[in-house]
Image (cartoon, rainbow, N blue to C red; front, side):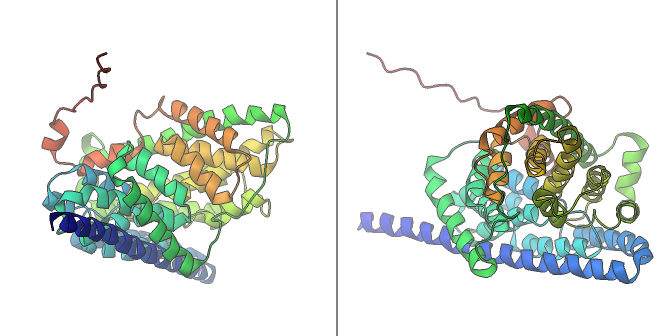
Length: 437
């Protein structure tokens, strides 16, 4: 009888993870469709009245920040730092402040609102917090498995958002937990599979950026690898440094002013993003997906100003306090960076330079090189460039650390942890002693 209860409890846990995966996949797919509609609506408005965006974006940014602070606290920004922080907490009540159904609803609505008013943000980071929130809510009566549920929901959010199941697994290991957990590995994979199947049922089995077979044809083209790694890593490190600096709060009077004038600061950020969009001809708004895909396949030549303007618009959108991710915008900045660097490598295919730029910049931002090269390779169905992408990611992480000591997600996660949690001494795991003969 006891064995039967254990067996039943084990299957109940498995079904819980699978049901959560189905729910996460459905919400992520729905968010993807709605985000595309929001982006189209904004551009239709911009074409109707280009100058009106200079009023819409400031008012919209301020309104979104007001709703975030008033009704959905802890739903601002990417959402990945909140999920990381929630997983490291032990008190369910503290976790509920960072991941809950209320926050999931607010995250979806306010992320879409940000895209409606022209923010340079993505939906993939929010999918992580939404996935963690859904799984946490489903397992609220199973306190024992809460960390595993949050981990699985976060990984499923990435997998469903990009249709990249392998990247979801790697993201769970390298970014969310920074360890391989044998006990939950099967459940995490099951959740990702369920989320992926649901996403494919809604969106189809697609390759995010479209398949590409670009390769490095000659050995001299390999010089692009260290260049993209160093430039992408340094630029990504600067982006992370800005977000971390504003996330912790600027020192002095400026920091005090921003804290006491949140809405006015958000409106100023919205105006700056609108100006960037005006200068770029509307290219820097939204996720940057279309621009990155066009550059990758050579159907559009991005202007030299695209990468710096997209960098600026994404940084400003992120520090404004509105909900929205940096996943897709970072890949788009990297694509623009690679396209710019292609001027120095005329014999190297433009598609290769774009991919190397994506990996270099994204690895510089998150300092998670395995996640960076796996997600780019999987989003483009390109396995011929795995070794160059790996090397670029490693060089970029090392370059990024010259400017920023820690990846942006884990650094920002500390802002959501209680001081007593941060002050606890870290436990050092000692290696097991060899068996005595």
